[in-house]
Image 1 (cartoon, rainbow, N blue to C red):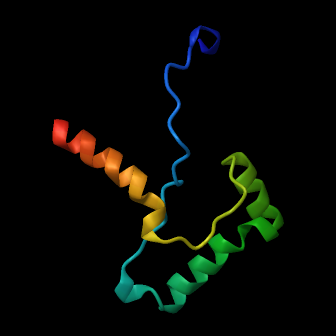
Image 2 (cartoon, one colour; image 1 turned 90 degrees about the vertical axis):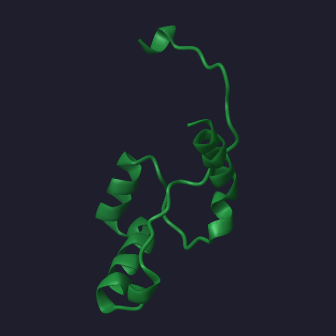
Length: 81
């Protein structure tokens, strides 16, 4: 099936979907531990294996502006619905 597939358009690079949470729980011990685990995956042997399966090299703290182009595309699709 792949051999019969052709690329008709390539978009620009877009941010990987974020992992988000509620601002109110941001500093709770459980959320901090989760954030530390996600951000430290690349330096952990098992975490590195998981990232390899996902074809990722790690997670980094981000900001909403990383997803502006994705939001613009979503607004176009939403307007057509």
